[in-house]
Length: 320
Image 1 (tube, rainbow, N blue to C red):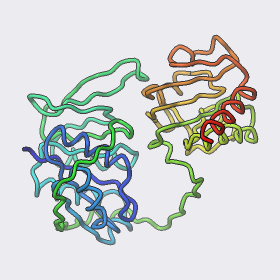
Image 2: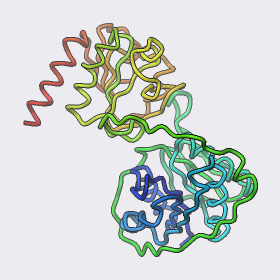
Image 3: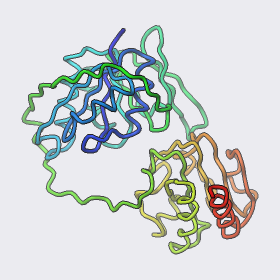
Image 4: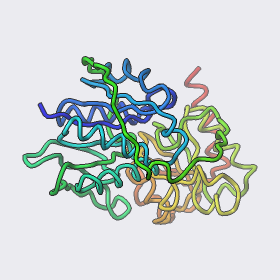
């Protein structure tokens, strides 16, 4: 079978969920060959093999931590030249989409970003994307070169499929361009103990109707009862009620969880663009004419200050 190159997103050897999802999709197209870079790269092999990687190419060098993007692009290009894959798959994120785009330019190929599904086609992988705020689904394929495709988190299930996972060292020669932008400092993001917003299976978001930063405690309580991530609409973020890193929407983050609960969010197109691909959508809003009700699976017309606490207590009761 053809080999499919999969770029590994990991933190010090701990493989992140979107990469495991990507391996599920890669197996539809061929034999996954994983590329893990940076500190702990070799430690990813066991998890990758358990989920279908027939081979794991690893490389570690100071450049991956000390310089931005380009060293990773050059390493992924080296892997591409060593493997000659039928496609290159990359988990979708701001940095990873830049890596994918730069790689596509270097190898003279087309790129598809933010795919939500992949299938094998007679002329190469066919990617499904959501367009126009998820009002339409499109199917497309790359017609020139080796397809480079980024895939949104939560687009596929994580499925165990034990494979060889043979570890091989990847030789990378860095160019002068790789040292062009140096990282001068890093500040770790303060952990909330909640799932990463773009990877979470459940997201609970609050909007203008929350009516103040102090009231987001109600949203957080529901999220914590469900083991969910917390999101916010642009209106709530612009008002200073919640951090921009939690904004869901066209100018924030795109999410596609199994369950999305929107509380006090009217459903403007800007917000819908970031969450409309969610599998099940629940809205709580006291305005029965709010646009959000046009796309939900379940809607509750009521005051969130009455409904959300009751929902939180019911979840806690059922969980025992």
